[in-house]
Length: 277
Image (cartoon, one colour):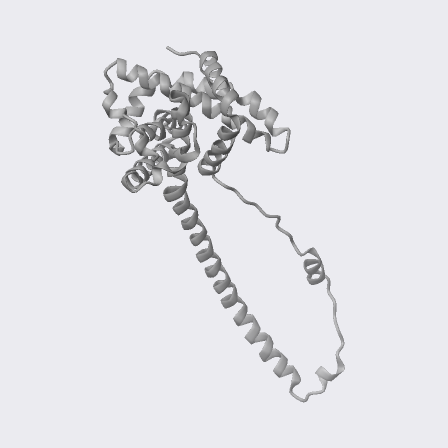
């Protein structure tokens, strides 16, 4: 059994010694796990609409001379009116292509770069807490090792896909599954070769009966995040190390429980320095 206060005390002890290293790693995790959003102001040209609504008439004498200029003007106007829809179609088509490319690049970054970085970041916090001598940045790159990379990418993508499918059903099932699969990055940090199906199943078993308590643990950081938000959002990044260190302590407790209860064997979650060297 675990308590929030116990986890946080242990996390604070870790951060007292390694806060700035933890801050930098937490920054990488935050970037890797956040979905970037961008927005822009839309401007409307009111002067043009006002101009078109007013009934102006211009008396241009040379257009009434009967020398064919009126016909030419009508021809040009007709050609322009036909070309404008085509130009808009091209513009919308190009815009659609750009949007698709942006989405593809964002998904590619999330799958092939961000997910392995998250696993490496979780490895830093758990191994730093478990083994004092393992508090170093090399953990961030552990998932990119040739023997680890493919399996980690597949497992993390599988987790994201399954969570997304449950969110399509209803919000509540999606939230429940997101907590059920929340330990997958930690499990992969312990065993980069862990089968993706096994990683999800093991995470579900380890969080069984714990999800509400983990949810309350997350809620306990809201005050800190509100305080961080008062500094233009920059404060969030100073709170993250505390939250991540606490979650690492939680994983270590749940892993010990899983081993003691026979859910998994110690050899299944073996970790060696060779993973980061």
